Length: 223
Image 1 (tube, rainbow, N blue to C red):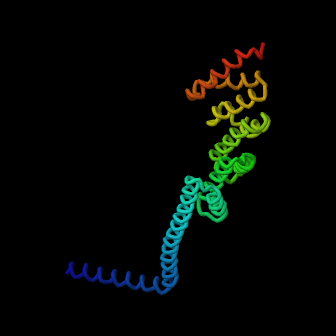
Image 2 (image 1 turned 180 degrees about the horizontal axis):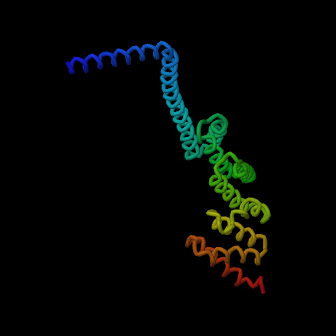
């Protein structure tokens, strides 16, 4: 008798659950279906976007490599044309890479003023990661060591010469060389001495700084 009662209770419970599910589905079924459709559409859309994004990146990468190949073959005008186009309509990080390579290409062609202008513009673009901006500012400064004034070099990298900057070694060397070239031996000595006193300075930079300090001392300009 007990078994029959248990069986009857289970059947009643199952029937109740079935009726509850029917009621829930009747009330919320369209909403559930709508959510399911949205999920499917969202997943499909994400997959489609990823495919499109990868396709665009691949196409821009091919264009960038084509420009580098043209430059490697000394076809600088063609390389410049391709890089200029890629900097405007490329995808992902390739427009920025094109801008940087284009500035270097201008320097290679002898248009140092244009190269410095491009590097400086990139260095001031707040939408670009700081590490990249600092690197291109340092590149501009090194070009200016040969072609510009100390003030121009300082405007690019003096704030990078502080102890907390990862770019301080190159910045200090550029500033020291620019000051030495301008005939300001005291300022040049100070910058090179900072390099020598910084135990984290790379050996090559430190050795060059010591050589410059020896040259400044031997010149007798500070006596």
